Image 1 (tube, rainbow, N blue to C red):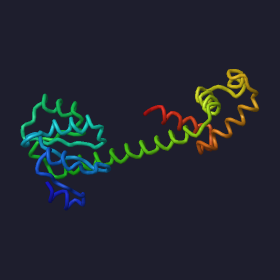
Image 2 (cartoon, rainbow, N blue to C red):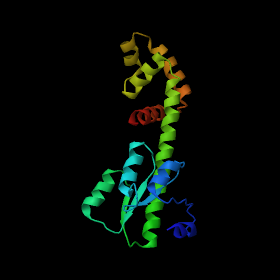
Image 3 (cartoon, rainbow, N blue to C red):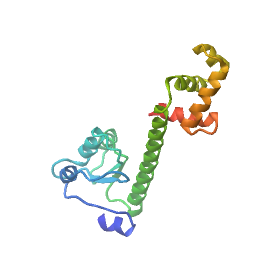
Image 4 (cartoon, rainbow, N blue to C red):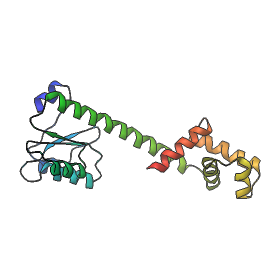
Length: 184
């Protein structure tokens, strides 16, 4: 497996067991864990479960030579990204790893974007946040002004300030950002 991944130009680091892996606590950003169901000590499904419990945002591919439906379901419930039965084709495991790495990278990018948006939202004053919330709800400036007992011109000022702090070029940018923040 290590040789196959190396030849496919996928950086690899192997461990003698799941327990050795957990003990070393390697950095998991941009990684994918490939584990076997049957190992001494912590088995592959338990490893996937422990990583999930630790909120480790790392895809886990579980391989086994003794697959059955209940075991596959158990692995997926434990957080496995994929479940592959041995013997497997080299291309099948490589495709599963590449897919998991791509999805992991996309998830990481989404989380980074969400953090940036939350940081920008934190810069808003209470009134600016109220105006933004009104805009996201689809309210017109006049309605937001009425709701908060301020003038429509004051709403425009708060809106402009919020747009600048949020680095939003359009109202749809602003709505998209607030939606991203709320989805987390």
